[in-house]
Image (cartoon, rainbow, N blue to C red; front, side, top):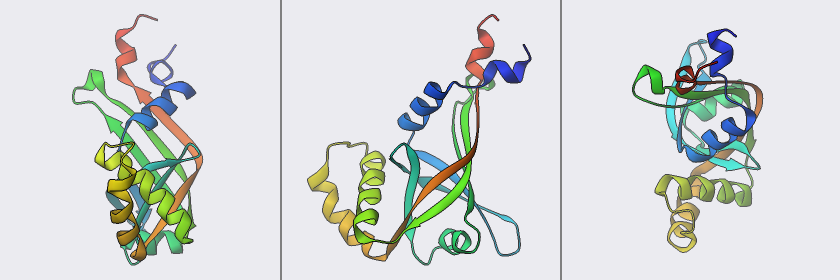
Length: 154
């Protein structure tokens, strides 16, 4: 078995890794074709990556023009500990206030590390959500790696 095949995560490992992480690097495409990369807190909507941002943000403008995105979630400091999931997909915009609030709450709960903090977060999310839009990423391709598997004999 080649080294690349050894480090691929299973579907369950990918789901767990995405579920336990909180931040990702979001890649969108600038008007001139160059990548636009930003770090974002994210939530999960029916198992898919979701995030919210201001309607006038560069990433929003980029997605409106070209909805293709990449989402990199990674962990580890040493080579032997590196893990990651790279999701390529299409960002589907959510404009309705209920959808924005739901995604905003999902993001805020994870961002704050407070999964049950409804009362504390609702006012903040409702206030900041007035100028925000939300997106759900429909995956088209997923790549994963877990270098910790290299220490395990084949």
